[in-house]
Image (cartoon, rainbow, N blue to C red):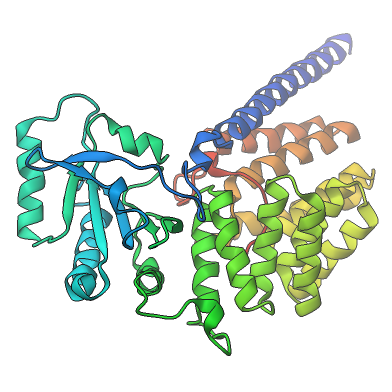
Length: 426
């Protein structure tokens, strides 16, 4: 009898000890995950802004001759494109795609518009550039019949001054010497937008403000600006996404996704009131727009306005009960307001939905499901410990630990360490 009591007591102590260690482990995992996903300040800047005058500079061309690029500013429309050699044949070569794209435009319109395009080659290493590398660059330029000027940024001098964060990167400077447009990378989806900006830069198309009525519909300029802003947001370039978003709203103020994304960006930049205003604008335009309900609910939760937050999360679930993130956040709300049974129930639903997910949610989010599953499991374990159910707490903590170690996410495309927040942008 005494031995059984001692054995049971010992088992409970071991279980409690394991739970304690796992709790500490999970806290560490969650902390590490959060730290690893916070972008550095420098990664969110490009060093220059639209509307400003660019820094003037002089670089050498492929034959060593000095070229004064700054002398072109204020006299001609100028496009500067930073580019690099292909990494390998297995990678998409955005740099050469853009050089060929710009070259085609240059050949057609250089004589009539005075357009100058400057391709700034970014070397593979910071130090001395081997002659073999220069020859590779010359060969690519020759094979692709690139007609505009190619310069070499030895030591990454201009790369750093302009704060380039992606290769290729495009900077358009108008005849007045002001930066009109900045675009990192060159995906296929960006080509129509860049073509249109080139036409406006060179005077081949009217500025948007002069066009009446404004275009609307899936191929409108406002939608292309929104898609561009969304790409910048996904890259963590908040300031870069804000400018095209404002232009998008100026052209079409009746598009809820633009207001919703504006709300997210403003919130991340610390403008809480502005974010609330934008989410409300999105909902005024469309009361069934799920992302704005969800995001507004998160802001209310953050402000400890739990009743208002709950109303919006329930509205989300009434419109689409399959959004795991909504169940998850509602569970945290119930946990925060000491409604533990309800919390356990909705956390369970959230987990079931997360684990069914194979190819991503119906509403794409900015954070992977794995990160939220860990948070949900961790919260559930805490609830079970409060209820005295250490066995259940241990079970869910073990699941969280396996997930954190990557055992359960090997078939998911998303990385655990990409989790940033739960706001929905579409």
